[in-house]
Amino acid sequence: MGGKYRITGDAYPRMRRPRHRRRLVLAGIGAVVALSLAGWGTLQLIDVFTGGDKSVGAADHKRDCPTPKPSAAPAKALPKPAAIKVNVYNATTRSGLAKSAAEELKKRGFTIGEVGNATKAYDKKVPGTGVLLGAPTATNGSFTVLGTQLAGTVQKTDTRKTGEVDLILGTKFKAFSTPQEATAAMTALTKPAPAPSPSC
Image: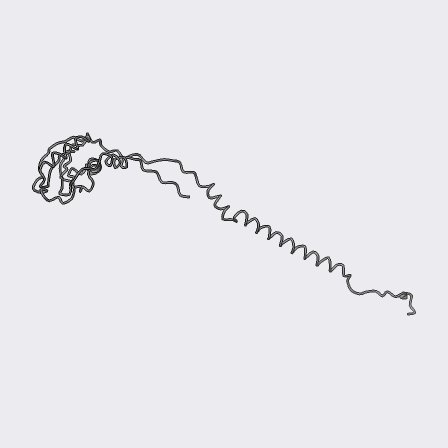
């Protein structure tokens, strides 16, 4: 080495990069991975303690759904017993049945018309408790009120123009409903129907 520069000592120059840069890179990657794992674990804990997105959605759903207000449909208007004129006819072989039935209906507030035996069209031809016969307009009024007094009656209409109703007693007639049963049935008919709650 006869040149200008000479190598002295025991140290020789290294031609590769220092190792401390590689260590810095590896340390940075490790830090990123650690932070990612920590973030994922935090999210899992939040889901466990809060119920996840489902509970949040349910809360939002409840918040958006309006609180139903108590409301009811109008009560059905029915005629009073005193406004219903009832003709009582006996279609059975038991004597005096129409008279006793008419007296009981009168006690309950109904207006009594004719009382007697049924016509040939119905005499001994009513196998049930009774038949309610009247004008078509009676189906939504008089029939409904009178039907609370005697369960199992059959409703029929004819061409009459008057508002009176015929009660034709059949072979299965034993007695009217008790006043308590009749009152309960009438209350159920006149009670306002609850309005449907809003669906969300």
